[in-house]
Length: 130
Image 1 (cartoon, rainbow, N blue to C red):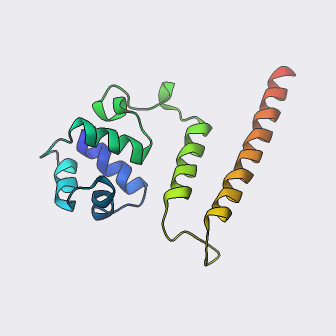
Image 2: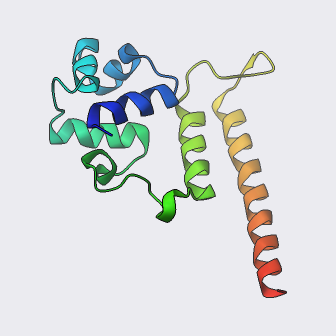
């Protein structure tokens, strides 16, 4: 997959327009379009910024890492980290039509951490008893 395709895929995954990504990168929407069409390559500073925004490694963009886990699997912790990042960064986020404030967002993140810790503990216990 080309660098441009990866940028496009991640942008769409995050529900972002080219214009929204451009604002976060500090470039024009046409620059984002050119990155996605492989007509222009982002410099190292811009690649670093893309990694920060999308929560991926530089290796992912440079082609030496298609997935961040062996055999193409994805760790739950990676999904959780991405969800946490999106939850904290997403503008206009609502729950049952009511806007979430930062405290509400942290409550959701904390609840997920508790559930993840319980699941990890149950998994560890099941492994010990098998």
